[in-house]
Image 1: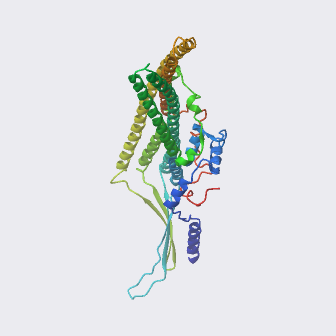
Image 2: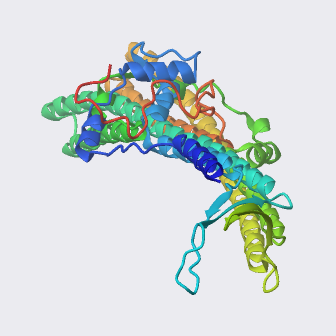
Image 3: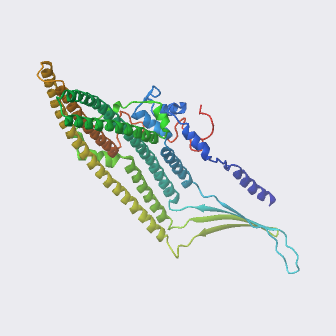
Length: 484
């Protein structure tokens, strides 16, 4: 008997020795804040991250465009790390769901006290109980966990798109503000020439004070417009820094490449903007749709699990007892009797959760249809506006050329071509505003489809769960010196 007990305890001790140990990782807010302040785009680990995420992307050449800044945002932005840890949690759930229930060991040592207060020989009982799961409960749990893991994986890709949208929007705003500033400065130069010319004429008595005052007012307005464009550019840079997950100082230290907004690689024409094509692309392929579809499948498996739980598991327990010198062997079979309930409440809850998951998916698809309709209308309308602005600009350029010839022939004075130049700049600004609206509408199309329009790659869609060089949230605030 002592040998059997020693064997049982030895096996239990060996199994306990394989258990995991706890390692604390405290967070220090001051160190975390300092780590955030030290972030910059020249970190060596960022280059390693970009190379791993997109081997074809070249970084560190002095210019950062929408593609490389998106990859930098995937490295720095906290929302990506949150989504990545949620995926890790979901994948751990698969391991948990597939675990076989551990058996239980029951020891019952004791002595019996007789009427004459004498003790009987030692009595000890050992019972090992195994749980046998029935009707595919473990398979249903594993299938549910796998679907939840797939939903978390799609949520990670959706989070990447949201981060990309923030980077692209900030860059687009910066591009628009820079263009407005450039046109305002050019218009201000022309306006200053006109004011100077009219002031000389007013001194000579060839111009009225009203004409001079009107042009001075116009000069003040265009000067304010230039200052406002500078403000918009500064705000856009701050939003870009926040979208990437950096202090604005890090953005100010690098050169940005905004050429993608001058000439987007992909400009769909009218035939490619059909409602059927757009809806097919978005309603079936967007990552948030695929994520909710996986959540619905998980709800299906949860319902299957609750239905299987109507049928009880079987508890099997072979046992041994040493009773007053006798060796006794037993076999215990225990089954829950589903008399008072058959798991109907849990089944009803699982059915309701499945209906809720289906409703969420349908609601998202309805929202996407609205986004597509809005993006399509905005883009087609902006295309027509740009076409009209191009026509007006061509007409103004021809008029300017005619006035140049007339000025060279002495038919008009200097004020006429200057005024024509100013009119052309006003039309240029109107056209530029139309182009901005077109690019913003193209961004709406990109968001509706989750498909790149301003760069040629899609590396930001495929995000590994853990990229080389990417520190976790508990690993970031370690050194007080820059990372090596």
